[in-house]
Length: 136
Image (cartoon, rainbow, N blue to C red; front, side, top):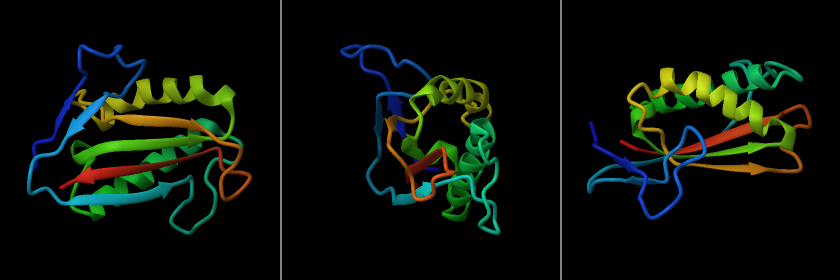
């Protein structure tokens, strides 16, 4: 497995949640780009209409499935980018990540994450989308 170095430099403020500031990929790793994942079930239908936590669970499950299909897992993730459509869901996202990330990333080496509040996604009923970069 590719050993990814994940760390928080002392020269910047500590992360305000379940993420790190820096991920460093060793030479020879293959970069895997995973498109933004939403709360769509395998049949393409929305999971969790109006339910932010249910949509988080499905979107992150889809991301994990894509990672596995590429031959990796959460230990290979070097960055995530999360888009949410309602500013009031920032606290819900942080709570969901605090609850679920210890299971997804049991070693506590949380990948860097960028969080954006956007005016909308491809479908008005989508409350979040999450994409990832991985090194395998």
